[in-house]
Image 1: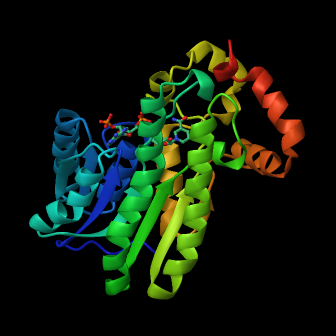
Image 2: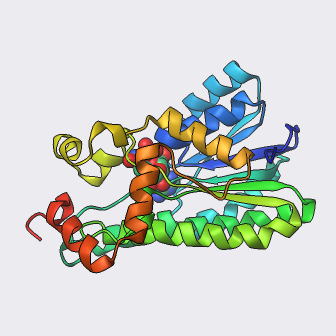
Length: 272
Ligand SMILES: NC(=O)c1ccc[n+]([C@@H]2O[C@H](COP(=O)([O-])OP(=O)(O)OC[C@H]3O[C@@H](n4cnc5c(N)ncnc54)[C@H](OP(=O)(O)O)[C@@H]3O)[C@@H](O)[C@H]2O)c1
C-alpha cells in the first residue's frame, strides 16, 4: 500500500477541500487516521469541516485559507505548514474550476485565473512539496484532472488544455519520483454533481440531456476511487466504466472527426 501510516508530525494537504470532491477526499484520508490540512479560499467553510472531521475521526485537522491563484500565497504554504510542526507526505491537488464559452468572447482575467488554479498551482505545489517527500523517501501525490483531459474541448478550450496538462505532467513526475519511493496518481473524473457545473455557468437541464445519467458519479465515489487508486499506486484513475470507455474512444478518435462533433453540441459554443 502506498499511503503512509499515520504520524502526528505528518499531514495530507488537500486543495479545494471546502466542497465537492476535495471535501470527500479529505474525509476519506481522515477516516484512515491520517491528519489533514485543508486548503481553499472559504475559511468559514473550512473551519466548519475541520471541526467535523476532527470530532468524527480523532485526527489532527488544520486549515490554511489560501487563494491558489496568488503565487506568493502558494509560496508561503510550506512555511505555514512547518509553523504547525508538520510535514506534508500526501499532496492532493484538487482545487479547480472551468470557464465556459469561446476564447474570443472570454473574460481574459477569468481565463488566466483558471490556468493559475488548474495548472500553475499544481506545478507550484508539486515543486514545493515533493522535495521533502523525496528526501524522506515517502509520499504520495494525487492530482485531479478530468476526462476533459483526453481531447480538446471547443467551448471549454482552456479547461480541456489545463486538464490535459495535469494528465501529462502527472505521468511524467510519476516516473521521476518512482526511484525515490514517492508515488503520483492522476484522477480523471467524468461528470460529478458538485458546485462545479453551476460555477462554470452550465445549465443543469442542458447538461443532463447531453450527459446521460450513466456517466455521472457521486463526489463520494469519485473521491473513493481517487484515494484507493493513490493507495494502490495506480497511474490513472477514471471512475466509472462508461467514462473509461468514452475517454479511451476520445483519446483514439481523429481530431478532425471528433472536434466538429463536440463543437456542434457543446453549450459553450452557443452564439459562438
Ligand atoms: N464536478 C465535475 O463534474 C468534475 C469533473 C471532472 C473533474 N473535476 C475536477 O475536480 C476538482 C474539484 O471540483 P469539484 O467538482 O469538487 O468542484 P467544487 O465543488 O466547485 O470544488 C472546487 C474547489 O476548488 C476550490 N478553489 C477554486 N478556486 C480556488 C482558488 N483560487 N484558490 C483555492 N481554492 C480554490 C474551491 O474552494 P473555494 O471556493 O472555497 O476557494 C472548492 O473547494 C476540480 O479540479 C475539477 O476541475 C470536476
